Structure formats: structure tokens, C-alpha cells
Length: 68
Image (cartoon, rainbow, N blue to C red; front, side, top):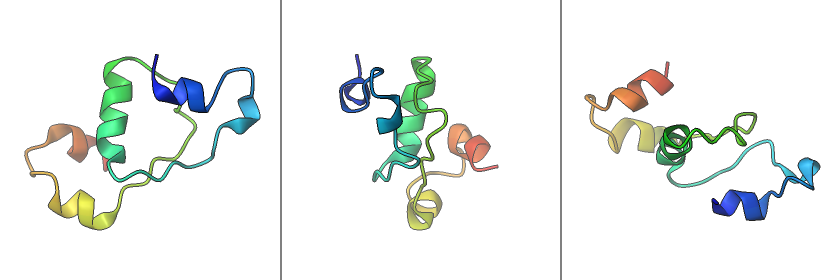
């Protein structure tokens, strides 16, 4: 069970934020999708422009597809 289940429990559905600002949201999204976890599907996961442009290689297909 991920820590987001503890932080945003099912019995408090209005506790879910609209956005989560995290230093590495791209890898958080990759992790959630890998495990088929869809609890954060309606939550925005913004990525810093510098991070998006400088921290990933052009060959990173996941990031290229998500950024479209």
C-alpha cells in the first residue's frame, strides 16, 4: 500500500488535493502507472520546466509521450 493511501484515505474523499507539487512528479506518475494505481488520476502532477528539459534524455520515451 502506497503512502498516498495513508495521506489521502478513501473514507475522506474530499481530502484529495487538486494538485501535488513534488520534485519528481514524472517518476511518481511512471510508478503509479506501472502498478496500475489510478487513485491520483484526477490530481494534477505539474513538472518544473527545468526538470522536464534538463533531467531527462530525449530518448526517454515515457517523458516524451506524457509531455504531448
